Length: 215
Image (cartoon, rainbow, N blue to C red):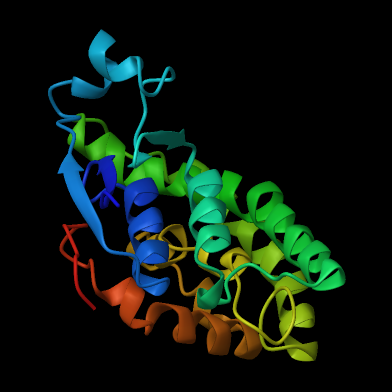
């Protein structure tokens, strides 16, 4: 069987999220770098694979898939031994509940902060501190709810780590880069966050995602 191929930019948040899940599931993969600085992802040949002109996508023996969270779900479903996607119906719904919370209540603000502090400076633009402060305040309110949830259970979907937790990587650590301590201010959130950011699968690609064939 052909080795799974991951196409993306090694340091982008979306590519690193997929790389983290691949590593957590111990899936051998070949990484093919896309030159986003020179617009490779916007060219016609690339957009035949990913019509939206974004990164990343995977090629699993001819099966092409894009959208970060869809890729992560596919990996966890194909390699169930990783335990990142519950198989029990009730546990699965609780996972989807937690995943919906992440994409609805956490990611919109966290990704805006990421854009301000990572993308704008590369474009020669000054980050909007007023917007950053506003979005961090919104995240802080979301984390008040997380604090309650994580006071009752170890992870967002229960007492077992799932993709819903990993979906918060890599944006959550960027908040500290923006000068905020909100991920470590509340004790239950801090315990959960510190565990996530200490995982070998997260630390493995600190310098960028790369081909990983052995674990």
